[in-house]
Length: 172
Image (cartoon, rainbow, N blue to C red; front, top):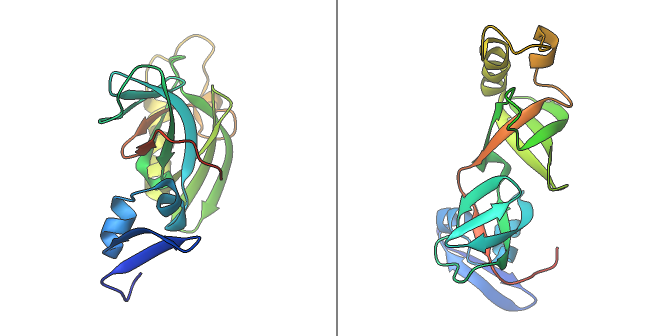
């Protein structure tokens, strides 16, 4: 995609989408195209009144009609924001942290049982660890400095910045 100005994505002999590399990546037309051009989290949820809900997460779902519509929320790891949570209102817990050069890959187990992957820069991750330590002083009863390190089992809150919502069911 680096050397092209127009891309055609096909699946099983059928054209899924035609567009610029940027359009293909930023506005994929189908779940296949979304997965084809990069790593993506797939979360299952329900849409009501233009909002998709996956556990405690709310994601705008404009154009999804009806209430109680099953949806698939596709979100790239770089489009998820995380922050430490020490007030009990977390969306999940850290299951794994991998340092990948300039990026930190964080696997988070959601309360729904799903796992979501988040990519953050090393600098962002370090800042979040400082934020966790300085979040609230005095710290709540029973919370120590060791509890405020972003490591396995640390509670985090999430924000989905950009996602693709698809109503149709599909297999991965």
